[in-house]
Length: 66
Image 1 (cartoon, rainbow, N blue to C red):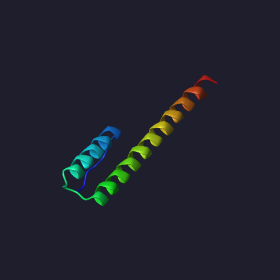
Image 2: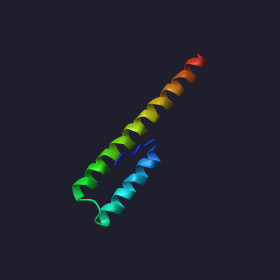
Image 3: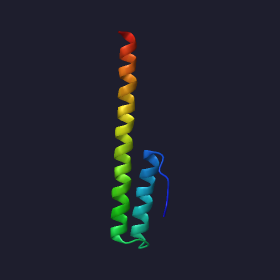
Image 4: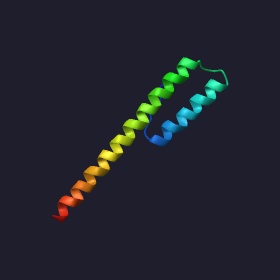
């Protein structure tokens, strides 16, 4: 399965879909764990990137005032 994750919300939805597939017995426990780990890593990386971008924006604004 190949999907392109473009946002935190999309990754969260995919985690929910993975859980549903696991509960229905369509995927194994190890597959569900692997998908969940990958999606959580994507969420964390995206969050850190957004925080860094926001900090850069604020630093630029501060630089413009001085």
